[in-house]
Amino acid sequence: MNFLQILGYILYGILIFITFVWMLGVRKKLGILCPTIMGSLYFLILTIIFTLGDINYLHLAWVIPLVYVFILFNDFFFVVRIPIINEVFRFICQLYSGIIRIGINQERIRKAQELSYKRSIDDWAKKNQNK
Image (cartoon, rainbow, N blue to C red; front, side, top):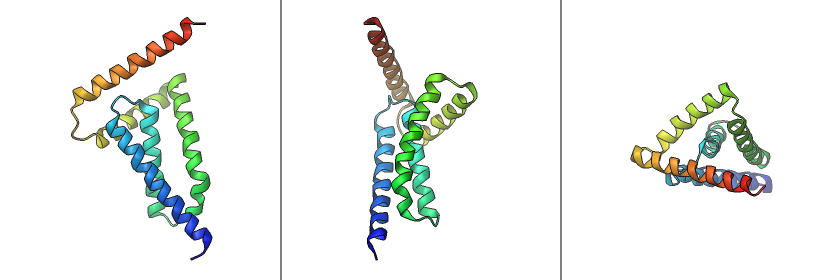
């Protein structure tokens, strides 16, 4: 086994770790919004592709940072509100978070999300009030 293969396996281990951390974040932090949930889904899809596919793990050196760029684009689509893309992302987000959060009371999730929305609006209002 040469150095590049070892590096590839290290990157694959990092990918698995990142995937589990993001999935745990979706499960534990009930108030997070859709762009973060979609980021978790991107990492899960990437892990599945690299596990089942015959792809060199060294590609993870550029693919993992690319996922973070996709997460930034998610923020753009949810902020700008492109209607068709927004609705598709919301549906996928609700489906994925519903699977990850099996066993958690829906009322508790709804309250946490409402509190998160309220905090976001309050932060935005404070920021714009000082201008």
